[in-house]
Image (cartoon, rainbow, N blue to C red; front, top):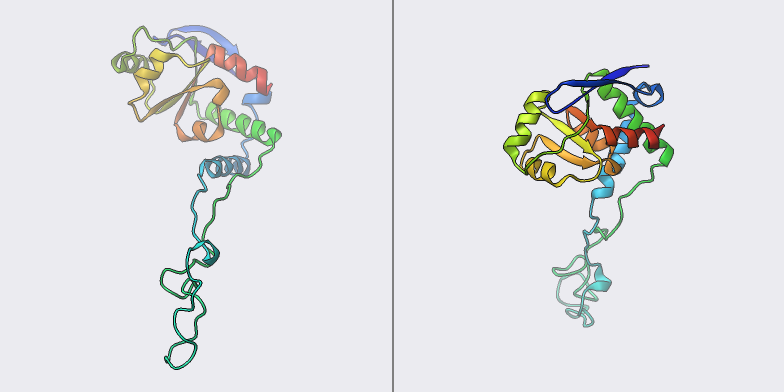
Length: 206
């Protein structure tokens, strides 16, 4: 069983935490991570693109020109797809891009992502990330002490001061533990868990 040192905001070691092998010691399956990430990104698509077919366009009841004698191909309506202003053939219509991911697959993918961060020594456990004031400068001091430069910060709840101190930094993101997902874990080089968030992860994935 692997262990990880839990530190404070000054990187002073508070205690050593034993990490469950079933969560942080699983085999990293790239195909599973890929499947879940693709499903997450697909679910974000709006799917609102829409075009009108010939039945959706107003007018066109009158024959645009006589059947014979014009030298042109015969037409029965000005709303035909071959006419300017006519309907669109095989155009996009509103749809959902969501694909199903089973709960078992989602949990397995989260375990893979967490195990991968631990193997790369990119996983940090901090007792708390609370800031005294909503200031970016104060957060950067904490990040410098912890050695963070591109990190996802997973917290219990949504600490307002921390969120306000981080929101204008592109290399950091604050995420409540109940919103933890594979895409965000893989999008950042480092993963920081507060102790309450870690306890909830163990409870859900254990």
